[in-house]
Length: 178
Image (cartoon, rainbow, N blue to C red; front, side, top):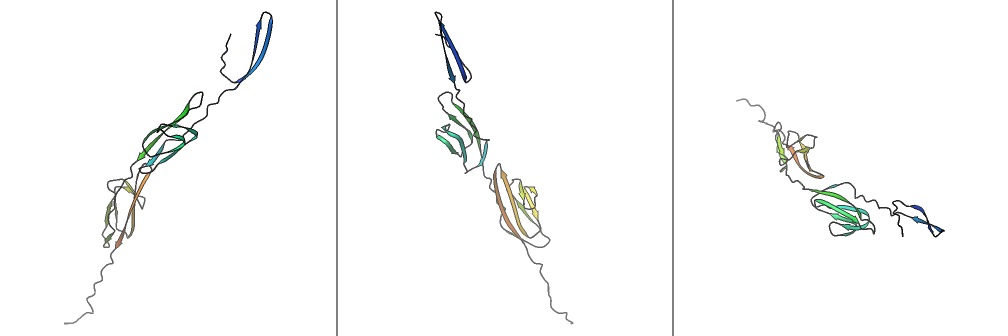
């Protein structure tokens, strides 16, 4: 017996001859298409959150779970494999977990006209309510002061209120003659 290897789908004809007699037949070869798997781009999440990863069909995850979607709340590479009968295929995605930064601008502040209040964002570079970027902010204006710091996709905001004291009015009464 002879064998022929084919690498693509299609119609194949075979003719065999033996002792002056021949016969032929046709066979249709269909290829098994490999499913496309794309878990999407790598993801960045905040501590305490979870990333939803979805595959186009059920399979095996490197976390030990099976199914077509999982939630991941840790940093690392997560692999998915679709174990079809011919050749397993898969994809991987990297999850990065960022820490939520904490800082405290302190208490609301009351200042005298002409004075200023200084606020710091715990050493972090912050975006302040007027668009200024820096680790501290100085104001002599009344109103709300807001600072926002970021670490990857994680945003933390704090705010305080600055109040101006009214100027004191000195009133010694009417002029007197002594």
